[in-house]
Length: 252
Image (cartoon, rainbow, N blue to C red; front, side, top):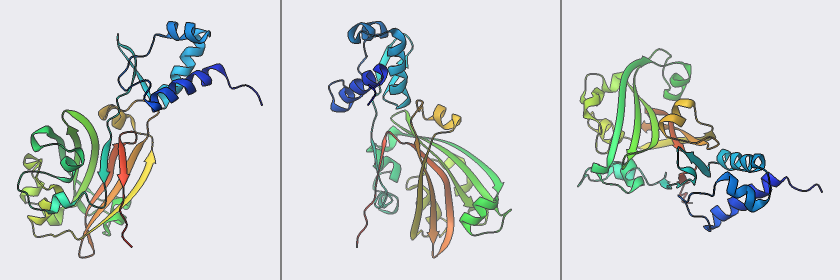
């Protein structure tokens, strides 16, 4: 069997040290010159090894800061139970997102954009309505302690929320999220359908969520239902794949 190329062996060793904790998150790696001397290889070989690790999202280059092992924060998203925060009593302002992150309401920030649109064929199929049906198109960027960690594009039917406080972006963020918003207009959500895919981020997603090259995202399509009728379609919810754990509990 041919010997593994030197740059891959170097990447393997550094990767293992990162995963095992020998090299801690946030640590600055030696310079390329120092690594070349350590491994007795050329600078080109070291650069190729670093590109491998960058493509895996393990390291990143900082201006005047060298190469840093990425400090990846894990967001634990409990899909089957997370919405209890939205439907439970609001003794203090909270939502499924703040519960996921373990943050207070004051540590939460939501950038919002609202517009009116018409359902294309895909959205019409997801809602179970005719193409051209009027929708409220909402775009959210979620921040935890100032760090952007999630994007979402949830649509609502204009026939449900038009002319109500739910259609006013000035009321965001709304404790209890979409569950509470729809509850305020007499719609009680009783079923949730989520479809999870993985893909590479779009340029906008990578820029907004500060995702380095090589890191995929979870792209979740969520439908909220009330008595069998789809009342919200979030398409998509985007979360960096290296900072999320999707937990599902299935009771038999």
